[in-house]
Image (cartoon, rainbow, N blue to C red; front, side, top):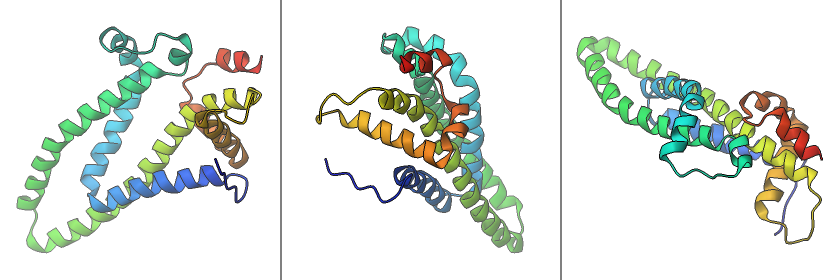
Length: 196
């Protein structure tokens, strides 16, 4: 595999541009009302996913290896399931609110609402992009830390190891690893075990 490294931290910056750019474009394409609902839904899913993770293991076939549970496999699946439920629930709510706003606002106020709604959508899209980047960095950080501790055995090392190790090094170079630690599901025991 040919790897191009432009400067230290380039892969983390490319991931930043990809994730934040995608959410900003989503905010541009949709509106502030929908992005606000997505933002609140994301926060609620982050709060309730750890509570649902233990219950989810009884109904969903999750990996049994303790390492996966240490890295938060149950929390990730719970977050995904909660976000699907939030997206389904906000569709109907968005339709009702949009209909209510359309018929309650005066004609001259409707253009102002559309402009403000569009700006709020772009702004919340960027904020959500940074939040989801930190969530991804929190998941990648323990995997990358373990991958950097392992000595490469051969040139045919799996691409996932190399990518996680490179992203971890780039996050550390840019200082994102400290802020991503807030979303890191791994405990200190994991890092102690990876150091051995």
